[in-house]
Each structure stands twice: as C-alpha cells, then as structure tokens.
Image (cartoon, rainbow, N blue to C red; front, side, top):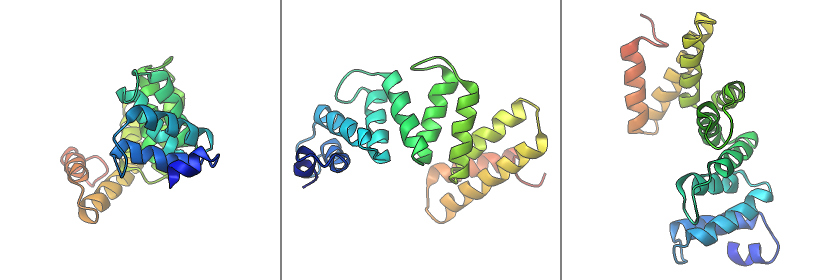
Length: 178
C-alpha cells in the first residue's frame, strides 16, 4: 500500500514503504530499494525516513557507507524532533565523521535531544559540561535528568541498557545524592 502510494507521487508514503523493504514486511528484503524510498520520504519531510536513510548510509545498507549522508540525514531528523537522531548526529559531529568536527553544533544537538527527554543525551551533556568544568550545578542537573530518564526506561519500559546506565550513574554518584 505504501509502495503504491509512493510510486503514485505521495512521497510521505515512501517512509512506510522503505521500512517494509528494510524489515522484509510482506516484501523481499531489499536495502537498495529501501534506501531510495527512504531518501524520497526524507525529501518529503518525514523524520522517520530521514533517520532510516541515515542509518542505512551509516551502516552501508543498500550501498556504500557514506557518513556525510548519514550526518545530513540524522541532522534533518533531529531538526524534525527525533531525539535518537539528535544523539547520532551529535556523535558524528563531535568525532568529525562525515565532515569537519563541530563541537558546538554537537552540543546543540544533544541539548535538543535532552529537551526531548533523551536520558542518553542528558547524560552525554552532563559529561561534557563536567569535563569542561564550566558549571558543576548545570552538570548535576543534567545528570539528574539522565537518572530520571534511565530510571523510567528501566522500571516502566524494562529496557536493560537503561538499567545498566542507571546503575553506572548511581555507582558514580552522578545526578544522585552523594
């Protein structure tokens, strides 16, 4: 259904079609086709398609690894409000992968993700703030937000990675009463 709509010119439907080819959902697994469809969906403004095409470029699914394209896709999805893409974008920006290192922009992307309730982003921001020794109170507040987010993900969503992250922060005393 999404594939017919995408081919019929309804480009937002391309995101659904791309996901189907990525996960072999009623169609054969075809990363190359998924990448083309995801790109069309991203160009239509679908954040999920931008994230998908970025992941495909970052991992080389359906073509060669292209970290510049991954960085652009994650950036677009982040601007559209996808916290996971903000974190991925920030990692590429900080490391200078797919283009020159842009620490200030990476911090902006992490702040956006933290504001979108990403515990991972709040924790990363806390670590950067603490490392810069700029504002210990701000770092503590960011860690507190990370602790709260990891705790919710651990207890409510039963996410093992969040439980591990929470345990690490508690052990370090980051964001918790010492």
